[in-house]
Length: 93
Image (cartoon, rainbow, N blue to C red; front, side):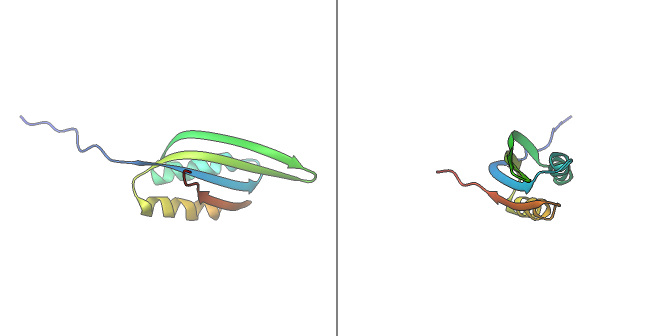
């Protein structure tokens, strides 16, 4: 009897930066999109800077994506979240 566990799916690490006006539930919304897309998070770093009346949140994420289409879809969905004003891939170097 031949048994197979399936093929190992190849993923690629990608560093992303999300910048938004801070709000309750922002991190939850981003992580929910990752779950919806089947994306694994390898690392997250976040900070909130309070400048007068605004609180700006920055999240640096290292995600494991399957392909460019999955990455593009995720970036588009994050960009559409309330209060997000910038999301982009950070290239090394």
